[in-house]
Structure formats: structure tokens, C-alpha cells
Length: 108
Length: 116
Image 1 (cartoon, rainbow over the protein chains, first blue to last red):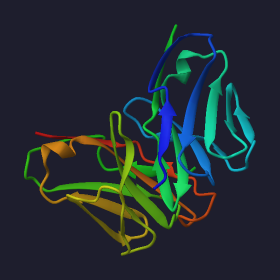
Image 2 (cartoon, rainbow over the protein chains, first blue to last red):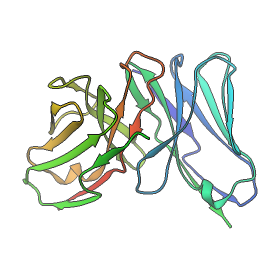
Image 3 (cartoon, helix red, strand yellow):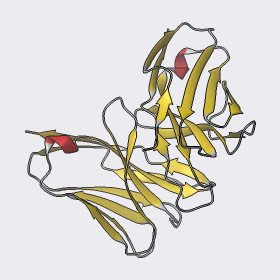
Image 4 (cartoon, chains in turn blue, yellow):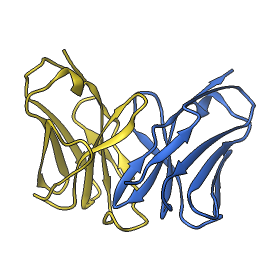
């Protein structure tokens, strides 16, 4: 089955700093999703990547899918307290599979 | 906007009780999913459904059952709750079939279940 590994498991950054979260798959990804979850709440869709080398941005969040379509990174520029939460990558392999998540804390 | 609602945000039950978690979506989606989320384990799929009265086991179906009598409603049932079922339960729905790439899932707010 599709296994997704996220790193790091948790991250604490100072407000204004840049950060990167990685998601690595054991198999080729045909659709890679990034979600954000505020503590104790449901998931909010951020973006989806499909093609090798694809890159998408939304406000200060940029996600990339590598050419081999086995790794994706999520980059946040000039982090803010509103970016805090759990970031999950998900992939389609018959049904949706998710990574364990990365807990981001942004210190003001 | 797609709206997925879950019957309770917080629930406390006792070991051995029968527990019903309800999920309703208002966008006529064919697919509905139940996940549980535990620290360090991420989201794990319990059951999903592609159509009314149709269900498929996910990764961890043991101890759970589901019911989908109407398209908009998908219920998760814990026949006899146990302490290891204490978790955050998330419901999701999507428009396309599981093999379609544009299978964005829309999530409910979650139900935090504690079994004492």
C-alpha cells in the first residue's frame, strides 16, 4: 500500500522565518494533496499537485512535486502565527492515504 | 461551499456502550469516508462508501461498522466501545470516484470521542 512519510514530525519556528515540510512516498504519486488542520478541528484543503515538477502557490505557501513524483515539499515564507497547525499530505492510491502530519508552532 | 457536518464535537462514552457517530454532507457527493486520527499515526481509514447501501473496509475496520441509508448521511457505529477507540473521528466526502485524480475530499470538523 502507499506509504507516506512526513518530516519533520513537529516544527517550532520564530514568526517571520521560512520553513519547509516534506512528504515522501514509497510509490509514484498520481495526485498529492496538502491539507491544514487547526488543532482539534477538521482538515482544510490547501492545494493539489499532479504533474512531475509542478509547483503551486497560495499566499505565502508554496508546494512542489518532484519530477519523479515521489516527493513533495511545502514551503512557508515569512511564517505567521496564523500558519500554526498540523499539515498533512495525502495521496490517492485507490483511496486516500495520509501522512502522519507535521505539527507547526509559530512563536510570535 | 461544501459543508460536511458531524453530529457531535465532543463525546464521552463508557466501555461497552454502543456509539453512533453521524456525518451529513450537503453537496450530493457519492463518496463518503470515516477516518480516525491518533497522535503519531496520522489519519487512518476505517470505512468508506461509494453509494447508498454500499460500504468498503478501509485499513482498520475492526470494532466498527457503518451505515449509509441515504446519500447525504454516513454513520459510524461502535458496537461495543472500548478504551482503545478513544480518538478523533473525521468524516469526509468527495464527488469523484476513488480512482479519479481530482478526488478532493472535504472534511467535517471532527468528533473527539473519549471512552472511559
